[in-house]
Amino acid sequence: MMRFSLLGVCPSASTGMDLQSVRTRLNPPQILRDLITEPAFTEADLGMPLPKTRHACSVCLPTWNSVLGYEKKLAKVMRALQAGYPRFVLHPATERLFEVARASLAENGSQVVVFPNKDAAQRAQRFVEKRTGSASRIASFEGLQALVVSEEDYPVAMEYWRYTGEVVSSRQADRILRGKESKSHNSVSLRKRLAKLGNHKPESVFIYENGMAAMYAIFRAANKLLPGRKTLQLEFPYVDAMRVQKHLGNGVVYLNEAVGESLDEALSRIAKGEFSAVFCEAPSNPLMRTVDLPRVSRACRDGGVPLVVDDTISSTANVRVDKYADVIVSSLTKWISGKGDVMAGQITVCRKSPLQSELMAFFEADCPNGCRLYASDARVLARNISSFSDRMKKCNETAEVIADFLQAHPAIETVWYPKYTTPESYEAIRREGGGYGGLISFVLKNRKKTPRFFDALKISKGPSLGTEFSLACPYTLLAHYDELEWVEGCGLDKHLIRISVGTEDAGELESRLAQALELA
Picture 1 (cartoon, rainbow, N blue to C red):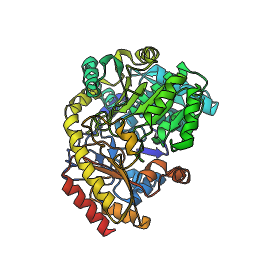
Picture 2: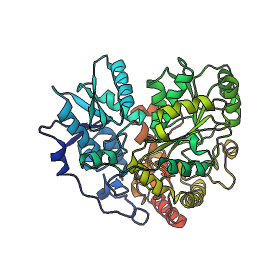
Picture 3: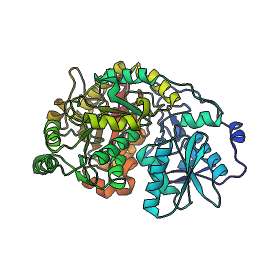
């Protein structure tokens, strides 16, 4: 059995665990359920993998109370989980791999966290020892590297796993447990295909285990180029992007709304070379705000400071930021894969960046052959990419219909969507022929009715975004439950609902939303 901690799954104590015994009890593949035609939104769907496959990257949390139960780690909810976002909840195969590694390597109640390579394990070791002052050790295990820590230090090691994304893929864990070697994958071909999507050079594209691993690599590159300085975060970021800057470097300066005099002051500090890097999302998640990238870029060039732009939320199909950024980070787990069954991240070094040669040198050393993605995951990603352009176009069209519907609905107070939110800044980076993306956030005028609306909504419900099937979640509760007062001060209402619009018929989605709003 697994027992859940606040930061992941903590393997339970076991005896006599070895690879051979584990191989005899692996779960069979699950039957696929088409979430486009049969969404997962009922209480009976609680804990179901989304999609319903072995390597799903999301899980169904169908009601407001189930989300609260997940955040409070209530046994009823946690026992029902068959999956979870892999950085937050260990995949069953990865959890079993941890069990086997612990039985082989640990003693006296120690715990083990397995990493994909020695560099990642050493970075984790330094993080744990700096935070706790306790000693730990690293040992080889089945071609991977295991960090052996005390029971007390295990949650800290799992913080590193979550924040940095330097994790063992569920497919890699599964194949090790089954005693199978992964066939090699042509990373050159995959880099070419990803580069083509954004009109980049293939050699400037580097593929990582997931979006956070890519973001953390950029963070490390910036700290190597300009050591000893804080980073600057513009606009409200994805939760772990902020935590990497806060906990793994020299600190972060945060500008919640990059406008007016506050932005002017920040640009002056950037131009003076005060920061090691400037981070922003374009647009941001979940408030869909876009910074004035031309102005920020000019200040960064003046100060010799790398500008890092995350284009995940609208995707490279809709926005083009390489004219302004020095390096782009993208979560391929989201729109580009679109299936919700594989994690991957992309770094793109921009050809117009004055820091191009320094950045290229770092990533060429950090990401051998341009790809750190496990071969089995790379094959799945390559297969999923083929439908990206048509899929994104459909999501754009449907999301705009839904956003317009919500914007006009009398029960809705505010809609956050690039068409309405900082539109001038978004238009400055919008691709010719591009849309506004598939992500929409909103709040009801009567906040008390939000739980009832969410429960009545007949759309699949769970964390993540960018899947071909629509996904809804009470984002603020799910991502920031332990810091609600602070995030509400940053403009995130605790009743905010976020919908990632999929490829369903626009009229059908609008009808489902209308019904839920009426029932609420």
